[in-house]
Amino acid sequence: MRLRPPDPQYLTLLRPYGEVIQKLALATRKLILEEAPAALEFVYEVYTIANHFSFTDRPSGAFVFTTTHAHWVNLGFNFGSALPDPQKLLRGEGKFIRHIRIAQLSDLEALGVRELIRAALAEADRPEGHTEKPRTVVHRAQSSTKRSGRSASASSRTRRS
Image (tube, rainbow, N blue to C red):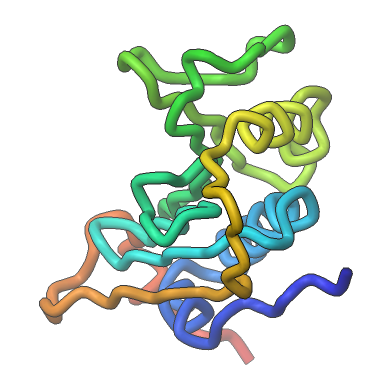
């Protein structure tokens, strides 16, 4: 199955983050969709760009998500505390949510990353008779204020010829 391309609005939301972070966000998305090509995608512009993957029409049913930050992308698991993590990759102290910090492309290839996505996928809520075509829903912020997660230097960089 050919992976669906990123939604153009998602690409627009990523633009302020700089090329390295854009590549990390897109590579993380690709890894998720390689394992779950039928997942629905819910993108939110909040203090970060949050991308939730679910088999329900509710983002709260997400089995995995990403958040984009100035210097890394988090690969998050809503019920990460219940996932097997023999490589000790998961970070977080909360009751349920855990994440892996992706700071370079090689972090996605680390032993255990794909296995964590598969474990979350195995536990994902999948409604009986789910026939909805995979799609992306983008929710843009109403405010024109800048997100604090973007690199301040990204907007003030000068181009070198």
